[in-house]
Image (cartoon, rainbow over all chains, first blue to last red; front, side, top):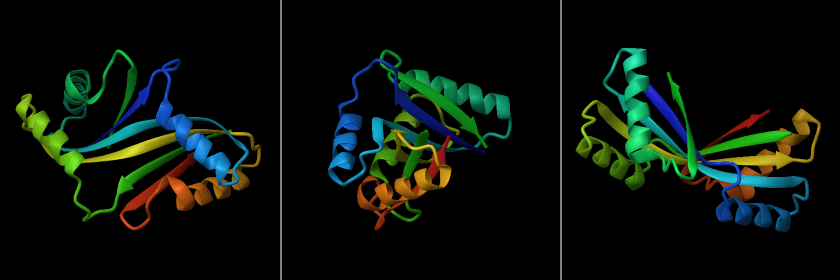
Length: 79
Length: 79
C-alpha cells in the first residue's frame, strides 16, 4: 500500500522559499505568477493491507515526525 | 487559477532525504514503512483564466526553473 503525504506551511506563515521562487519566475518572464507557496511531499511504501490502519499509522507519523504542526498542515492520500 | 506542481526524484536516483526519513520512522516504531521518497510541492496562483494556457506556462516554468529534468520528474495539476 502506498501513501503520499503533502506538507505545506499554514496560511499566514511566511514562506521565503516560495517568495524566492516567485521572484525567480518573474525574472524569467512569467508576470502572471502571483503568490507561490513551497512545501514537501513524502511518498511511503507501507507493508499494510488495511486502508484505515494505514491512514491511522501515517497520521501518527505526520504528528510525530513528518510535519511541524505549529507552522505546517499535512494532507494524506492512501492508494 | 491555481496550479500545483509536484517534483519528485526519478526512479533509480538515490534519495538520501527519503532514506533518512525512513530510518527515523523505523526508529520511532513504524516497522511497516518500506521505501520512502521525498519531493517538493509548489503551489502557484496564476493570473490566467485559460486552462490550456495555464498548463503550458507551468510546463515551461518546470522546464526552466522548478524541476531539474536530469534527475527529477514533475506533475502538474491545474485547479
